[in-house]
Image (tube, rainbow, N blue to C red; front, side, top):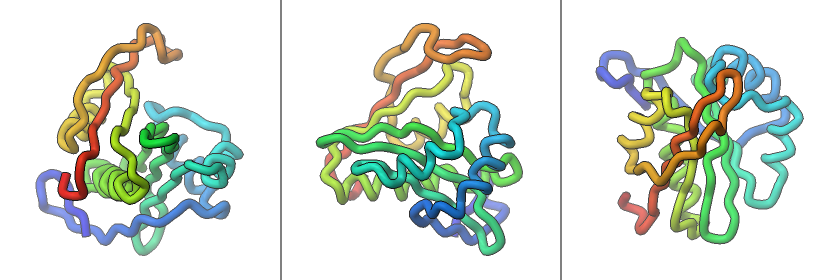
Length: 162
């Protein structure tokens, strides 16, 4: 179960691995999430099938509501994309996905996790900071449409309790 940040609504959430049949739902989530990286639909299955690829989806009883894409190389991981339907934001979906990914990384002996986000994306930054990510640098003019710097963040994974 996950609750929103105010603790008022409770919805049952399940995280599972991506299935090729999820592509249509993921495309709909991306259309609803203009701030997320807009990947072509064939990229999802390709990442999921790649060694080190991590592609998790989050669903309620009735529908898929969010996803997280990442990759692992050696002892490091990078979160590549995370998106949640607008109607399901601030209900614990992104946190549920992030915690599941971090658990997956720990089991794979990952020691550091990296990600980038638009400097203006304060809700995402707050989410990552709540889960122990810290700023690690800036990539100048990294994003397009509109052009914007990327804030690089990282989290060290030292043991399963963090």
